[in-house]
Length: 239
Image (cartoon, rainbow, N blue to C red):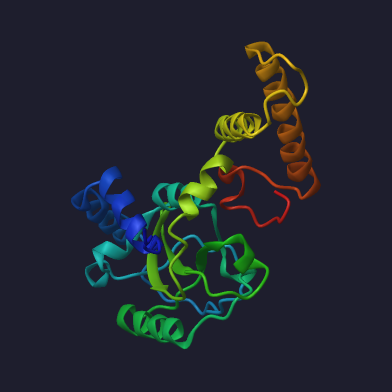
């Protein structure tokens, strides 16, 4: 059985379609852009800038609807696939020339300097160079973001499944419970007692569960790991 890679941009579109209709998004963004000051200010557009920018002066009629996403939709995808959504200054990978070209085209079309870039990518891309599916965004305002460019490879098709245990403590406990049960089934009959009984099985299961839970807790504390909702927009490695 062959699994297809996960295109995170497609997942974003599907999440947006379930959460809000297109007309509502366009109405909110159009109203937001009308309220902005249309004057241009000399703000340096550098992807490495640390200046806190929450909006850009886009021309509403030139925006592509399917590139507009709300922060709630981005957050859901980050939590489901254990990704981070951080300022571009924390990104350690290489921004491709195709992304730079799209930024220049967007700035020329909207007659503005884009700032406040955000990137959605796996945590490791904010530490080391890699090729996994980063997405470059620019803020529109009011928690809306405009997708400028996506590059690299798609995510592993099983990434959402692998990230599921780390969504919350309930999921993680359930996974440890199930793994402990299967490990207990693998223990040979009569290994600890001549009489096989349900009581012996559950005693072994309880022992396996404590062992595996201890390993998980030690791993979590030792490496400073946390659940997906706590790290999706955290700039700290041990958040």
